Image (tube, rainbow, N blue to C red; front, side):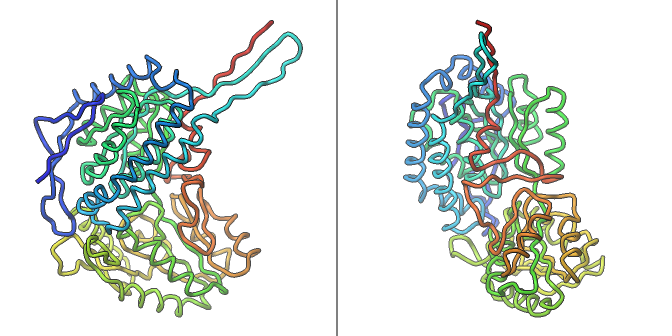
Length: 472
């Protein structure tokens, strides 16, 4: 069994205690990792602060950072197969999806590497005898807390723009699925980034995570995770007015209009809610269907769900396990609560008789006010319901405290676009769930958080604008 370490100031460091990493497909221990302490957190923050104070990232020509970033992308691609196997076994996702996650991480470094030497300020005319200009300068020390559902990709999503902008980063990996991130940092270790620029800690969120976000040296917080944890972090950040980027999940709805193409809807439902066992913050967790098409679409969705192959990620199954026993229990408890509230379980809603932490693909017919329609499940559970007209569909779609993504399916562009522009969320898909990519900004409103990741817009979250005004 392999034991993994934390990365602090350019060195791999062990600890007196360790965390067991469980393979969710087998419910057996897969590996262990050093459990970081508060002292480890302090050492990582000191290393990051010294890197910033010495200008090791910000004083070099930006083209040097570009070179580091592009070399990092190559290094990540080289270890993608090895890292994917580890990620598959610790997380439960398919081997193909795990490899895609590493390739996506490499793409983040390519994308933001291309921006590192193009972060240009502006000259502002103030009339004779004045010169005025702006500069983009790094925030400083960025603390980034990464979730377990896409640990490698989401880590790179914030790490790459932070480094490109000249920040030093302290990353807190998830206790449940930390090993893939070790492979990611190993790839970055030898490409030229200064000591202290990248630090990786795996420890309890209530101890190490809390200490990091409340540390005196933190200049920025990036968090992806649950609403309660995000709210606790924001309360602490408010005391020091620490800039933060928050991505807190969603309860996203897709609206199926009367003229929607059935095959497009069903394909997007399979990807939207059953990909990664539904453990996706931007999952299609609600499907709202025009009453004229409701029975047809409902039948097609249930047939598709019932025919999905359930199994391990190494077997490339259609539906893989959820990440842990606790997550399995949580998902099934929400299904049971839906039953008590009068919802109809159309299929699934149980744990298959398999060794790991599986939940059968579940489709539930419910009303908009039920808890299953309002609360994030984070599992392979779809809520389906009819609507009378577009006005009602938009009201239901916008009728939660979340606002991350949304979707519309229909063949008339004018109609789909008109509906899309009424939906509450940072990103709206038309005729393909998860349309977009690294190049498109991503983030939410309401309890889904604030700030944007991905795209050119994201890198400006990792910098602050300084204005210099000169009287000649």
